[in-house]
Every structure is written in structure tokens, then in C-alpha cells.
Length: 85
Image (cartoon, rainbow, N blue to C red; front, top):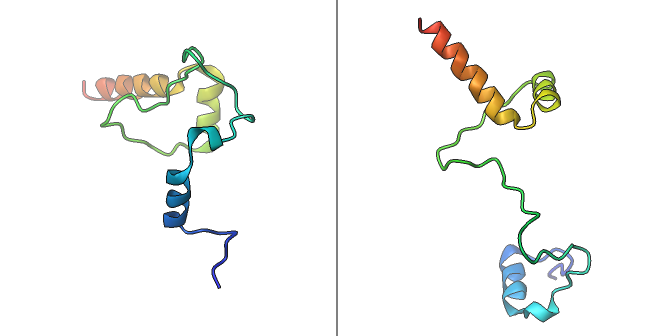
């Protein structure tokens, strides 16, 4: 017997495809009309690569820099340029 509490991915897609917008309950999320609250993610480039930082390093960056990924990139770039001299 199929467990209806855990539908397969295909079943979920079929259910979603059959729904009308009016059938979706949006009451638990805020309405955004103009996109003014949009906050972009950190994917600034299709060629972005990610590195895993140690927890204490990550904590230091987020406590000291609003845009910590750019700060980390700038520090790494400065280090590499100084090491190449």
C-alpha cells in the first residue's frame, strides 16, 4: 500500500501542476508587491566557488564585516599579491 503521507517527487510535481494559484495558501508569508524587500544571495557570479571556513573564522568575519564574503576575497587577494612580490 502506498504511503500518502510521503508522496514521491513525481506525485508532488503532479499535485503542484494541477493546482491553481487561487488554491495556494499564502497567509503565512508576507506579500511583496514591488520587490523592495528583495535581498540578493551571494551568487554574484556563475563562476563563484565556495570555501569552507573554520567556525571561529566565519564568526569573526560576520561580526566585523557587513559584506564578509567581499572582505574575505579582498584579504585573500592582498595576501596573494604580497606573497608574489
